[in-house]
Image 1 (cartoon, rainbow, N blue to C red):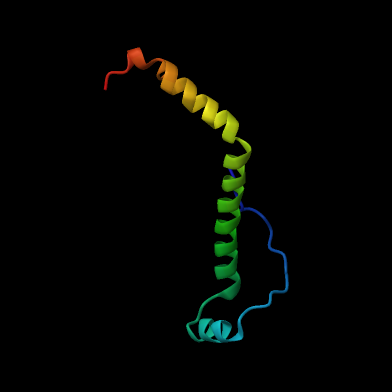
Image 2: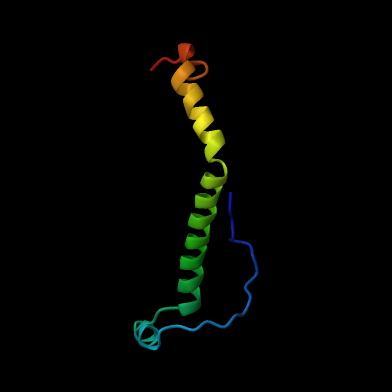
Length: 79
């Protein structure tokens, strides 16, 4: 699982749309925090997208086996 909570902060330079930045400041938004949260979400999304692509063959094989043989231990299910 991807966790970024304990990572230290690192200064960086960004080029942002000046009008968006101006309005964000007027709204009292914390730009660094907002970008950090949104970037972390996008990194996680892309990470899992790549993971699914990299593991597509294994996932497809597993799903085919379940379709063919059923769930393991299914006979013990009470629901």
